[in-house]
Image (tube, rainbow over all chains, first blue to last red; front, side, top):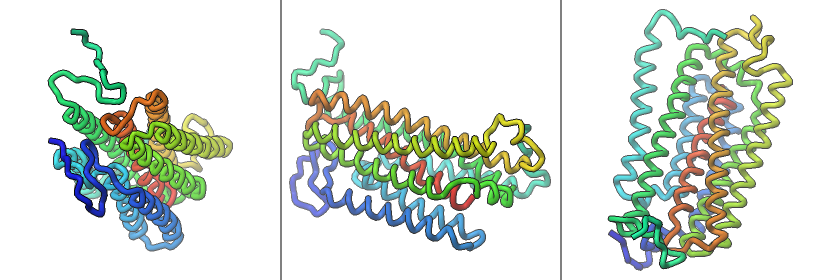
Length: 115
Length: 218
């Protein structure tokens, strides 16, 4: 199923194998990632209480999405690859969600390591 | 017929039984993505443990996290992001058949990785001087209570496992460089470059989450 489509679209042409992107895309993603990193550190100095971790994780997820979509070409991949990429996120959601649905409502907090 | 990959085209895809080269390329990518999925779950388990311990012992985790140097962690984040950029550019170079550029870009990636490990070394050794390491008998004193110690248990597990992945990634990319130096890649075949870069991007991804969690939010 190779795509020999050489039409000019702004996101680069379809190669026979993988998708070729114009260099400017990689550069823009790099700059965005660096800016977001600076923002993450800058925002962390302010105390928003419980919101700190939410904001930090949200910005980290944007960075992760940029790396996955563009550097790893996930945006241009087929549905099967998307499934491989999304299933672990879904499973982690169940794992962490399930743990937090259960543990906070128990009387004994998690036992500390026997160090 | 021998079972060696018979390469009549020196820069083309190796002959794989029962598959045309495009399918072989896609299968290799699937294989790496599937492996990356298992890696995400591996670190995900540790992230889950961190989430639960932090939620239960928030004060101690905030306090313990202050021992970490945000500037060193932040610099490492930038170093890895830059290394990822050059890995992506190496794949691009391979797609265009420029083997020399593949070598240059992946070499920069590996140099960045070395920089990451050097900074990590300074971080770990400074902790050693402050007595904040797992087998130190003084670390197990009452003033460092057990919740405090669990922050560091998770810190060393997660960053240590990540550093191991950095080293593995360096070896992988080193192998790809050795292939590129033999002019192995072209627009018709660059699978090892793509697959090696995918692994490297995952190493970057994991650190993108590790840094704010351990250093910033505690």
